[in-house]
Length: 196
Image (cartoon, rainbow, N blue to C red; front, side, top):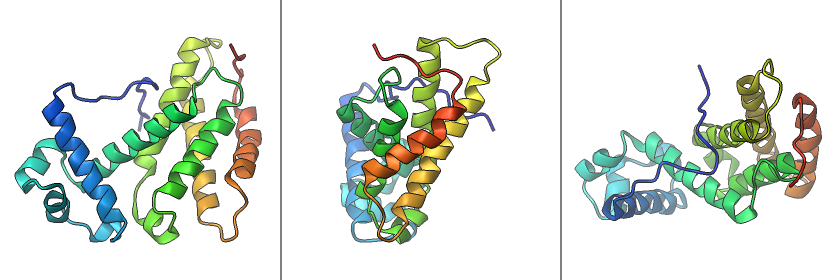
């Protein structure tokens, strides 16, 4: 399966304020419900009731609760990266991405059982891949470089290591594991862009 190749800094936000508001309400409802229930135990009816809309409105915006989770996770993860100022061309981008994923996982319930029930990789990995692919466009590499494969490998490695970290009892600080992840993924890269 070909990984997502969306451009990193942008997301597909609707321009109609009513659509944005309804989607924000649905995403907020899911966030609220996740503080009280496991993802697998949350129904579409629960989400719609929490958001103050009907099920038909839910289905106008999302095909199922997994699509809502993916949209919510992607949006929140992008916001976190934006707050951190993570861009591909900055020095220490792999450490920043790893720290962003660790922070996001620790903020998203932090409970290993809850995290295990949510397919977060379908939201986080495409964002990380997109940032890396966008970086390859900004910092050209030799044409024979398998950029898609490299981006997928690095994104999965960062996510997998961060998920392993969040599930580890007495885990080290996020900054420490992010530095380790950076050390592990840097050799995969043919060129590390210079900081501007």
